[in-house]
Length: 113
Length: 114
Image: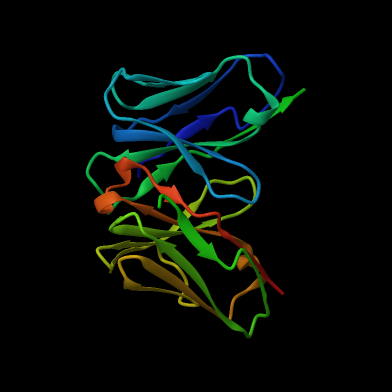
């Protein structure tokens, strides 16, 4: 069974601080995605990383896929209250299992003004 | 159109009721999913439809019955639910049955069973 361990589970910071969220696994994934979810809404896809060592930037968010495609990180620079939400990493199995994604446990981020 | 539309947004039902959740997408995605999500937890996969055929059932109780009438529509029929089934039910779609392309989620149906 493939698992994704996401940390930290909760993060409360002040506006302007930097933070990093980690997703780790002992398994290799064909790709890894990051989603952000606000209360009462569905998750919204932020990025998909596919290649080992890949780095993608989305404004103040930087996503990295580990060289071995077993781990990923999300770094937010100068966090703002609008970044508040539940961040989820999700991995696609190396051998496609009908489109099934493995989700991490999520990181609840609160950015205080 | 890059959205997944779910109706209703909120639903309150008794344990003896029968109701249906609906999901629609017009992105040409050939895989559609039902997920159940409890507060502050990750989504839990229930069903996967690939090319309108049920490909994965994650041992979901029979009181949940999925249906895929065509490539754009996905229904979830509910009957004799329990209070512990109260949750946010999310529909999602992806290209060609490959989750690696990323899902597009709907906004969900907030279900309360009384």
